[in-house]
Image (cartoon, rainbow, N blue to C red; front, side):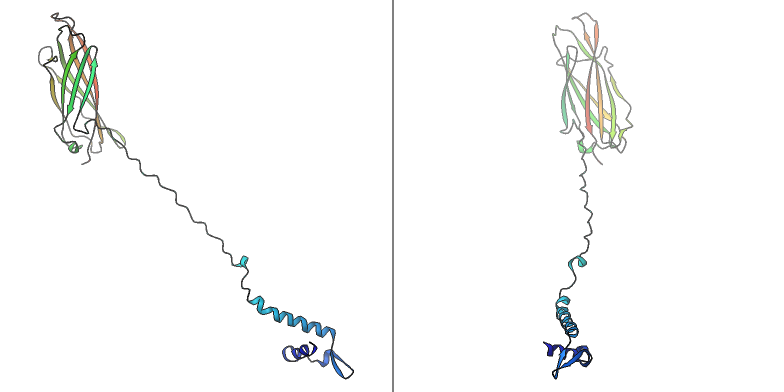
Amino acid sequence: MAVFAQDFLKTRMNVPVESCSVEKRGKMRISNRTRAYALGTLMVLAMGPALAGCGTAPWEGEVAATPTASSTPTAPPVMEIIENDLANGSTQHTVSAGNIALAIDYYSTLPMDQWTADANKPLTINVSGTLTGDDGQKMYLTKTSVLAQVTGPTGTLPAPEPIADVSTLGVGYPMKAPNTYTQIFVLPALDPAATSIVLSLTYELLLETTPTSGEYARQTASDTLTIAIAAP
């Protein structure tokens, strides 16, 4: 070991052996200080390659993960369902006024996909009446009124003028079987943004108080009809 240290000092460290040794019995002896220095240097050199092979410490090479923004799920749009009493082209309603019952058929000769806002939309109304406790009194329809309410995506829209059919036949249109009442009401063009129209219908009737008395009591029946407006 002493020889190896000596050679190392000569060749690698360039340290003169004479300056750090003493003569004893004709042989060269390495001082304790020099030996410790040489051994320490050898250990450092020996460990150097091993340390160099370790690479970068894990904590030095860590890169903070960049948080990714999570996308917020977008709720699907809610589809508005528009009621349409004439979805099948016709509908039947029954309304009453006192002891009078009216069976009403509503239909249109215009296909519903052509019920656009700008079209003239015909609505046919057919009414027949029955009387509970019929003792033979006469019954008449004197007036039919149609009041429209138009709506769109943002709410109420301008509505057409009310429509009315007033009887010109004496007291009114006879309503007992086999008589019926039939009339066509034409709804005019609406606001282009219209999506539906609600019709409030009023039927004004006269019922004879007793058979052949010639005296009449006024009765009123009401109905509502909702119709979708087709997109152009």
